[in-house]
Length: 430
Ligand code: GDP
Ligand code: IMO
Ligand code: MG
Image (cartoon, rainbow, N blue to C red; front, side, top):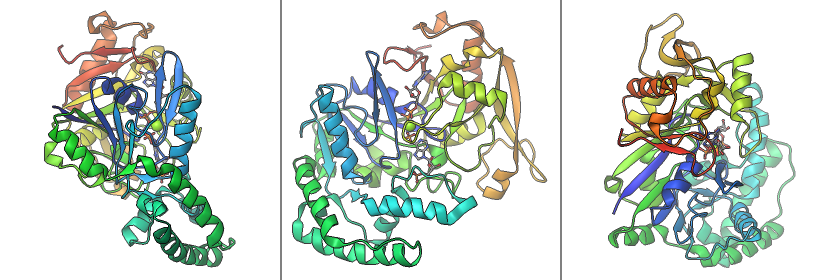
């Protein structure tokens, strides 16, 4: 039995979906434990593209158990839509293939409305959220006013919890945001119907997961977002509202953290970020534009253009250390093929402060004044998308990978050179 975790080691969109789908082939159970439909995990199978928001990225491999754990903020309309969309494409998601935690919090339409209203309220200070209701849902979870998936199934509980919820939210929407109050009946009917459809998938997934572990099954935890978007350890307040790394697994899945054998970070060979907030190695102008075009860097959830920059070794080293990573998977190496010179941010200077910092500054004011020090190496102007063996890569590409490996202090165990399942180069045995 092996229990592995895969997490984003940058600001999200590192290619986690592709790696989870690939590793799901030799795993029995795939578990989402945090985040919600703010995630957009792309998997390409035989040239067919799937973007998964809530269903774990193991759903495209046959015969696997996929779990949406209690720590996920679930928009049940998205879960049902994803099940329907897969059915239209010939993939049946039955109640063996997908399990949903009864204790996961529900994202109601009202959460999405409040998410968008608070972004407007924040104005120039906005976070640039995905508008999927994530922050307001987790806020209600912490305030103990939220609804859980189990509440949708028990009609009496649904009515009473929803009545209390809407009374408070209507006052907020009306008095603070100038919106219309929300009537209980329509919302009750809508979510009661949703609960009825979802019910067969719902259970105590923590107990199910621990039982599967006892039976010796292989388990793969699928992180969403990335370490730099972690609510505690990321670039707060420009973060998401959950613990994105291995720290989120215990509380978010009902699984003992000391039973996780190994964690693997995923990072692109360069760096991207969607939304507002500090991004030290960001490239504005033509180079950033070129990365965006070559990497097709547009959000899988919102379609927003991603901000692009060179690989930030300071940030990734921090992310890997924070999560105790045993290895790193480097994706999108093929995208760097168009550059005659490639750069890496190896340390930071803080304007008016410390110089040559190799540790990620926790303070937002320092972060805003960070000026990265870049080092450069020759690029490789060769198409590497068909390469499958490490030794077949151009020398300059291998030099780049080994340079990054030294900088981040963790072995690079796999390279990805294109979006397709088979476009990988395993290098664990190098
Ligand atoms: P995730 O959120 O971490 O799962 O990543 P996304 O799916 O949001 O974004 C990653 C994008 O890069 C998707 O469009 C993938 O199909 C694509 N992708 C993944 N790996 C590679 C790779 O090695 N090379 C290229 N060019 N694209 C990749
Ligand atoms: P995956 O799993 C990239 C970003 C948003 C915003 C901030 C807060 O596909 O890597 P939220 O809606 O969570 O309140 O937004 O976090 N963000 C992501 N960026 N990939 C993601 O997920 C993201 N999920 C949230 O753009 O800056
Ligand atoms: Mg994504």
